[in-house]
Image (cartoon, rainbow, N blue to C red; front, side):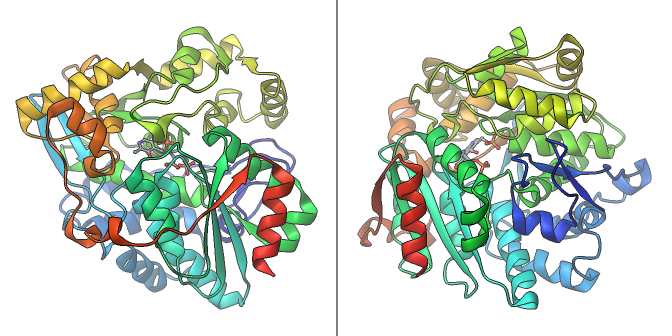
Length: 460
Ligand SMILES: Cc1ncc(COP(=O)(O)O)c(C=O)c1O
Ligand SMILES: N[C@@H](CCOP(=O)(O)O)C(=O)O
């Protein structure tokens, strides 16, 4: 299995190299050259298997010879032992044809743990084999950073720098990033928004000298390994509702488009997914794009679902690559146009996107009302991101079972949840001391050179 860049000019890489590299040298994102498929029998055989076994069968064709079967099984087993639910990703019924996939039982209480725990183990195995050392730089609107720090803290061959918007994440998210005491963890509060952090990360990758000097690696969902790990729970949940003998639909609270792109891959692999619904908050660039064909940046308005306050949705590039018939030149041109704030998608590509994805938007009031309504109707206390998903899903219910992804635990956003439904969600026992620990972070201006210098100084 080889991985190619969405911009068409970077060299094709193996799974291991694509994972350790993150972003392609031409600025593109790696995607598999071909998508392996699973037959109806293969999918049916997943019924009744453990999450770990499903993970092995779904991901194995993508990793090639990177790990032996025994090594890969061990990596998967270690990745999910710290989860607080035996099913790892349990389904809860919200209504006659509506189910919630709880993806927040991992160590940092967000869906990111599914992928980050796995790539933490994979990085460790690959790096200890080669003896190499890498510098991970990540951009986060809150959850990726916490999950990355949890997965990589204390590892010998990795330094991890996480850039987050100063004042733009919840207190729980910030403390998850700033309280670990391990010396290889560096929390950087950037005076900007998430898009600024993500742009700085991509610019660091574009600086070949910096990239090579620090041995830069990425763990955002620009890294294919992240997306791959997220494909698994589409299979586990669909199979438990009767796939492949029954269609299912998914609604996904969306920001950087990584999670829903994983659903798209599951569908391409043969999982019978009818609708894949993009759910956005008031920062609705993806929803507007699906309606108009124009991807137009308008600036971010902070919302109660801060992890989705994003304008430049990185993984949308992967969907565009397929919609444009895998034409890297066309994608490069769109990304160049985006530098001036907008690109327009061709009619042909738009038709393909519209056949693949539906979309919707939840306003702040609708998000609050959904948290309250669901708590009363089902007792499920939703985080604001999951509530955006549930609201948009309810607008798309049909005779096909709908699974909405619950992407974070409500206790990560207690103020918004309490204001919406009157309940203060408590952190689970393993995070009880979070507010008693000292914080350690550096406030940094939104300036690429300052950020790069800081990384280099810390490493020396
Ligand atoms: C809680 C939560 N929900 C939804 C999202 C959006 O996911 P994605 O960026 O993969 O679209 C994020 C951030 O990625 C998140 O942290
Ligand atoms: N919402 C994310 C933003 C980064 O997303 P990623 O999936 O590309 O890492 C966050 O919580 O940081």
